[in-house]
Amino acid sequence: GGERDVELVQYCELCGKMENLLRCGRCRNSFYCSKAHQKQDWKKHKLVCKEAERQQQQTPGLAAAVEVGGTREVAAAEGEPDVLGSVAVEPLNLSGASGAGVHSNGSSSRANGQPKSPPQKLALDCIVPCMNKHGICVVDNFLGEETGSSILEEVKTLYQTGRFTDGQLVSQKQDSSKDIRGDRITWIEGREPGCEKICLLMSSMDDLVRHCDGKLENYKINGRTK
Image (cartoon, rainbow, N blue to C red; front, side, top):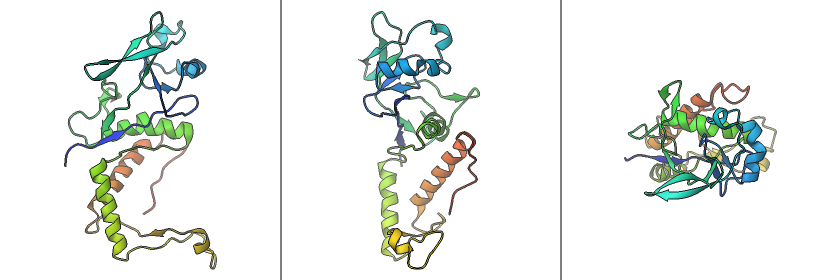
């Protein structure tokens, strides 16, 4: 058992690109693929940027990243405000153990003055903005490699016991399901013997869904399927 880390999925606020990103040096929460895209998004972003009121008269500039004691820190380019710095995505502890509730930039993550739990931080800082902007969100290394491998082994064991059946369409028309669906499925409550890690995955997903509910535009999440 040790701590589990997840990698936050970052993306350009303007185009959604996920490679070679630069971080806003003011709020350190928004990312861009280039200085040009940051400038194009500035009118919108300055409304939510932490330091916008103090520096709103300035045009956003590009900052360079330097290594300081093994930690990436942002240093402003000469003659320009500290706005963008290259980003190295840092893992987020989802276990609730020591170190939880910390931004990738090292600052405390708080909601209404209280520290956010790791699942709440992941939901509010990554999943909700990504879902609202792109309609999809991918979180790498969600529960850690060890737990992920254990989940896979539990699924393989279930499959080998013959528990899986052909997937069926919700609206079943005669002889149509096998033409459309080629997957095999089984329903798990999470309490079955040998499904402990699958249960952990389900519980973790339920926790994230709870934190996202009411924050995905006008959608209400009533629950999930079995």
